[in-house]
Image 1 (cartoon, rainbow, N blue to C red):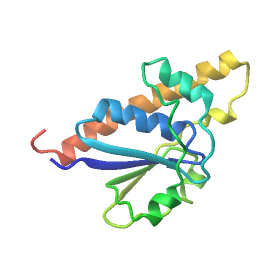
Image 2 (tube, one colour; image 1 turned 30 degrees about the vertical axis):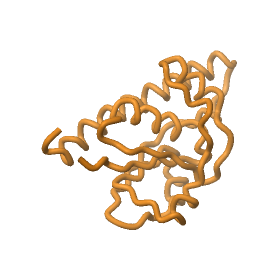
Image 3 (cartoon, rainbow, N blue to C red; image 1 turned 45 degrees about the vertical axis):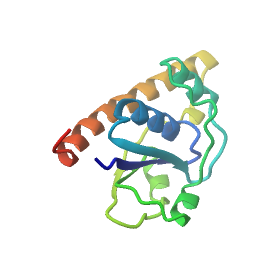
Amino acid sequence: MRKIKVLFVCIHNSARSQMAEALLKKHGRDFFEVESAGLEPGKLNPLAVKAMKDIGIDISQNQATSVFDLFRKGRNYNFVITVCDESSSERCPIFPGRVKRLHWGFTDPAALSGTEAEKQEQTNAIRDQIEQKIFEFIKDVLADFCDDC
């Protein structure tokens, strides 16, 4: 069976898209090929790294990738999912082929305020929201794409 190709995109590829990529790899590993990228790649957000480590997933060695580099390389995806705010998602390039674009807006951990503990708690909540959306996505996609799964 060919794997379903998914790209998660956010502004810096530093938190939300990295968490989404790691969670889909964990929960859908047999059915999905997953990448993430950013419109303006930055550094990995330590709040996201810790949030993922707390559930046993190490993203500390991940690197931010440019969505435009992937586009120029001619990458093809079944799904391109933006996880940033809606106005930023509109800046994402249109990938060739039959690509389904989805938008899942999540709060940016870089924009959180409060103490470090409060920001971590909020980032953990964002991670949990992303994970719930991943579970729904897997269920919906496999029902549509996978007759023999």
